[in-house]
Image 1 (cartoon, helix red, strand yellow):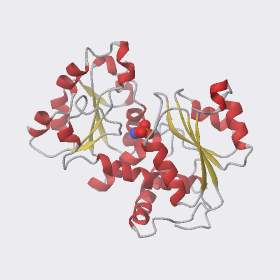
Image 2 (cartoon, rainbow, N blue to C red):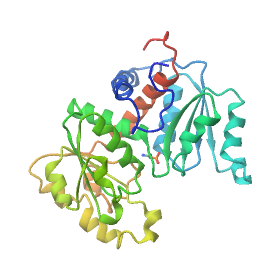
Image 3 (cartoon, rainbow, N blue to C red):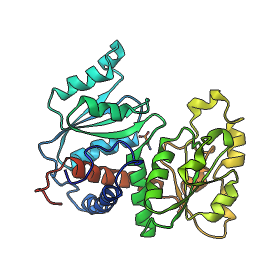
Length: 310
Ligand code: CP
């Protein structure tokens, strides 16, 4: 272990020294990903299990790729097609998998707290790949790597976060992480999609998208969770697009360039226009590549052997 922490459950209580170490080491892994072999066997002999109880494209693929690039053995477990469908509990599922000699587990689950619970059931390191609306720390770390790559720093950066802050684990992890590293944050969205105690997070709030866009260096646009539309928190997707969408017209009238980020998956034409998502100011696909480097860094620092130097 090369960090103070054994697990990565969330950024709220994660040591700043560990966070900085992960971000800085991600750039070394990025160089490896850019080299001809793209591989370094720092986790050879380690076995990891990717446990996805919820759907994922980016996080699951990038963890799998990061494990392969590090020379680890990995198993992919999906709730669909497993004995979870016969009623097996999380505890039994995990303990059965662990008895097959696992060194670490990556878990995505719809219940906030699932990753923390897992630390009680297994001896190895646990990495939270998203637990309900609680935290998605590895997404926030790859976002911070992308910001540092673009701006050379995070301290004093002005970051706008637009959208469904209430239900977003990405927003929560970014708020905790970015604040720790000295960024200024303004969140923007309809009041129905902001937590009641949002200002307790030490950030500013606006309901005016143009205001936040004129202020920020970079904007993180969040996905409108269409699966929650039945709760009636927004009148319609068309109304949301008009009032809070990152539209071509809004971005085009700004007096400066801003960096556009989105964790994916995107609803093109709702929270973001395709012309903006595909524009030169968007770093959305850079975020995805940085996701592999960041996850290599996290895995290496949590599970690697100190004697195997990078
Ligand atoms: N950003 C993110 O978590 O994407 P996936 O749901 O595809 O993993």
